[in-house]
Image (cartoon, rainbow, N blue to C red):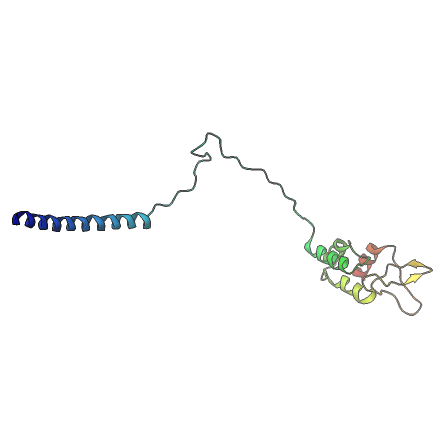
Length: 157
């Protein structure tokens, strides 16, 4: 009987050793597989592996605003202040670029001189379209045919 107990103790030791080794190997390989998991390669072909349908790319359309951002800035300010010069931002920018001056100068002068075209001189009840105070002194008032001509001539002069 004693020999069976000794054998049991020996097998218990062996069992513990083998259990410890297998447990440590399990943990080692388990951690190794978690830490060193191969990264999934991006899909190389354009077909899904689980379907026979090819990958389809949806069509997208969008609108590109091709107007000059400077013109939009001028127009937005004129719209915010409800100016009669609203919508002429492109003319301001085009003429400023043509005459090699800063794009905001003539718009700023119109704000200073006439509250952006709201307070312009009139000749015989007709508007002069002179929002820049050009040629206005005493009874003399220079007039333009329209806002565009006023912008063009004020930049030249």
